[in-house]
Length: 305
Image 1 (cartoon, rainbow, N blue to C red):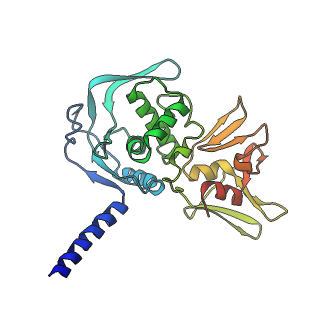
Image 2: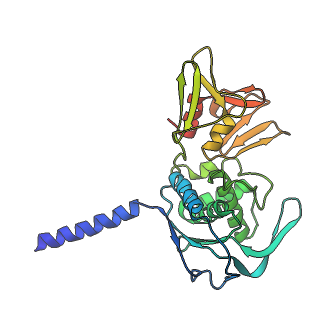
Image 3: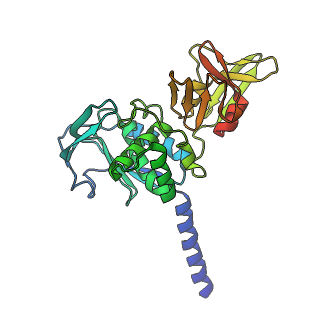
């Protein structure tokens, strides 16, 4: 009997730890506002829709990169308004004001809710998961590092939280989530932002190249990358090269270029085009206006194979 009881508790403990290890982003449809939304938001009408497939795809995209992130994403396909009006200041001195809300998150419960968001579901999902990542994936010291990186000292907590969610969306969201620029600031994620997630982030796509009879094919997640103008090639030493923008975008990175400084960046990767310096000494050349890199070197930097 004692052995049977011991076996039972061993199974319970092993199940508990297995469930904890299988951290995941769960998507669930709901028929009413979550209780934590009720004090702050109200249903604004009967008509509305959420693309459930898009929500699931965005959750899967983020989950691949952050397997330790635990979240329940609730889908409520009706328009929702804030109890009071809100106003955001834009970088150019203007403002965005209204009542309509696309989503909300509560880190205390590891829950987010997506409302009818005018066909911006991936955008909302990536932003709200950013709120949950702030609490789950970063230590207090790393949060302080973010405030310093962004120069947000003295800003209200809510503003820091929203800026972080926007940086998270632009750095790690899918290309559908990155359709709009930063809602609060005029630039993309700051240099070093991706480094805050060292040790908790996995590559969002596996990069590999294939060379056959002089033709170079590039694959991310086993899907072939298409190049609209400059095509990949093999140099005289047998090394495969490809335009870096389209590869990095397939890997889920936002590529930024500043014509004033001649610098291009994608997350923690930065290219000094005028100085001829690539990240971590990575070689690059300009080919018909495209920054091109050797695929083996790029794969090492982004964690591809």
